[in-house]
Amino acid sequence: METVRTDVLVVGAGPAGSMTAKWAAKSGAKVLMIEKRQEIGSPVRCGEGMSKDWLQEVGIVPGKWINVEVEGARIYSPSEKCLEINEKHAGNEVGYVVERDGFDKQLAIDAANAGVDIWLKTSATGILRENGHVVGVKAKRFGEPLEIRAKVTVGADGFESQVGRWAGLPTNLQLRDMDTCLQYRMTNVDSDVRYCDFYLGSCAPGGYVWIFPKAEGLANVGIGVQVSKVKSPADAKSYLDRWIEKHPGYAKGKKIDMVGGGVSISAPMKQTVTDGFLLVGDAARMIDPLTGGGIANGCIAGKIAGEVSARAVAAGDASKEVLAEYDRGWRARFEEKLYRNWLAKEKLCSLSDETFDKVVDALEGVKLEKLTVHNILKAVHVKYPEVTREFEAFL
Amino acid sequence: MPPSKRSLHIESSGQLCIYCGACVGICPLNCIYLDETRITFDENVCTRCEICVKACPVGAIAIG
Image 1 (spheres, chains in turn green, red):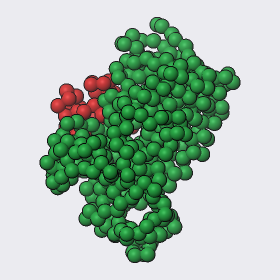
Image 2 (cartoon, rainbow over the protein chains, first blue to last red; image 1 turned 90 degrees about the horizontal axis):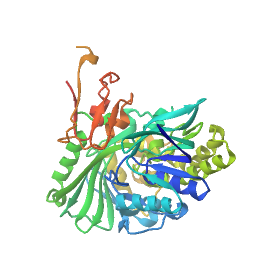
Image 3 (tube, chains in turn yellow, cyan; image 1 turned 180 degrees about the vertical axis):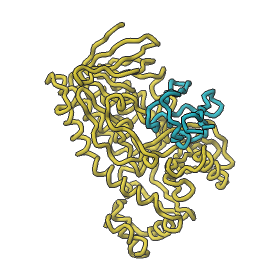
Image 4 (cartoon, each protein chain N blue to C red; image 1 turned 45 degrees about the vertical axis):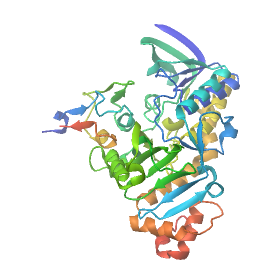
């Protein structure tokens, strides 16, 4: 069997993988990134809404992959009272609706330009270990088995990560830790290109319905439902179809595409590195449990992962003690927010439609300096103190 | 019938399945495999826990 050697091996060419690969190469390592599919970025499995204030930090230049730059978000309560959040208040939660396949390809191009080698149609089929250290993967390239040996192996294989499990990291999810998602791309709908819309409450138990505008009359219309709240098979589809039926501006539309997938909504993982191995992006459960967004955190962590991997290669030591710098790095950057948003999500999942309505009603017309859980609760407290009683931990 | 004797059926012809991988990610025993447009599971490892049935957004998995 053929054996190839590299410094850093990245499994999966999504945003987190490309970002890790690029920064490892820029930091001096020899990098190979493998992708099981024949095309990077396709098929798209994403709502395609993305915040934007982090792009510069990781060296991404806005490009043709942007469909729409929205001005704000509109959050609808179950009785469809609307809370409008403009860019200034929402901070990093408002931004672009993107062409994910184009975005992913651009990041792969950036990685290639940094010197990364990229192999398509190459899937990891198992992990290689020596003395307990991960030393690469068994793989198939165009169906041919081979061994890829690396000083650092990076699992960037997404929500259904295999390599993370093989490496023995605790990626397992409970039913309550995942939303099952379905989305149609619809044309001839009454979406508004200025806003991303979110509908909360019993229309999407443990999740929300989203409308992300792609162009005039064209939008991604999707839903996430917490798996622990699913009562019968295909609930995600039933809830979404029911929502569309009830909204004439969407019921008249035509579906041109359909995508599905799982989104983790768990608390942050306890461990993301082991000897010779680290996990990044959706595979490392870095998705924001409140918004369901994973691109920003995946890319931010990817940059840290790439830099730390290259340093480990240069030092000739990729033990978990050395790679722990990555674990500490991403935690310092966004673990607290992940944890806070997880707490907020847990609470939101338990609210009745009536309470949701009160919260949104209380916020109508209130000018918030910045949209934080704390500020929202303070505003709600003024009008409905009984609602905020349950949230005292946040205040 | 004991749970292990019931059979899991993943509709894998694409009539329902959209190959999204939601079942793969949630399977506690890591016994569901997705290979572009082919989805399979290991009958010997599967305990028929039905978690994948709930995770599937389109209802392509059934246990009978």
